[in-house]
Image (cartoon, rainbow, N blue to C red; front, side):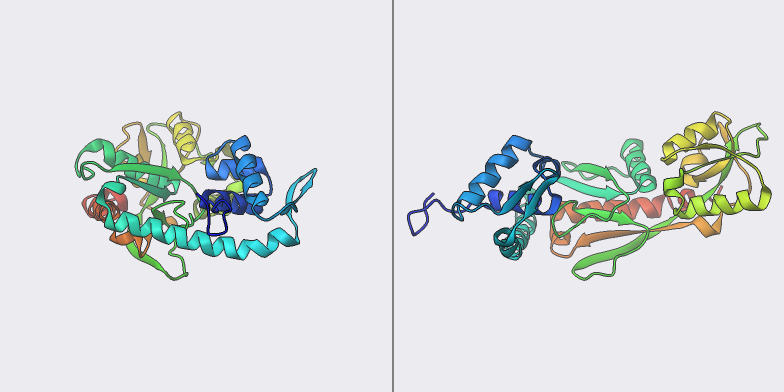
Length: 296
């Protein structure tokens, strides 16, 4: 399509590629962020740059691409364009029921296992026609940029423009393989030592002087090690209590109980499929309240 000056009109997809390269610093990383191949990113970036004359917008360096003065001057404008395009996408999801059939949910590991299990047990089925896409991540998704439609997190964000509601609490307790007496612990890796559960286990280690039998970067791997009898460890009660191979050692640990909140952009909350998923999750937390709290 030609603009009023007879030149090709600018394509938002090319501007989106420009922003991704500016943020990521390389064609490869921008391609990963956008879900595009590196050649496609390079081609679209070249088209975008050509629209501003012969001078490139990036300096090509051995370590990647760096914005030059001409490119840096365009970033703010491109970001405003991005904001407008994303607002249009959110409004389209609100006004067009057929457009919104997949809801992308950013979750931590515990919430991911809870929601995935709820999809299988059939006790409270997801509304017909909606596909739930679970993305396990410890990082807060940028909801304004539609990196996810919903997020479930331990702590609500302080930024505005978001709908936030508390869902409930996941209790955790110490478990071991039934019939074993090992005092050793299974816990997270050193890189995850800041997790509340890892900090609690570390205090037990310092007080008792016992050893760590295994470290694992995910709760799923820790669960496998504990079930195998490698040692004891903290697990969410809703996972461990129904497991016949495990037995609790004491009551749930109040210090590591994890409150969960649902977070969604206020615009997108009005989309029918997003509202349906929020209502479904709220109902799940009510139905499973005792299991989540470790009431046996």
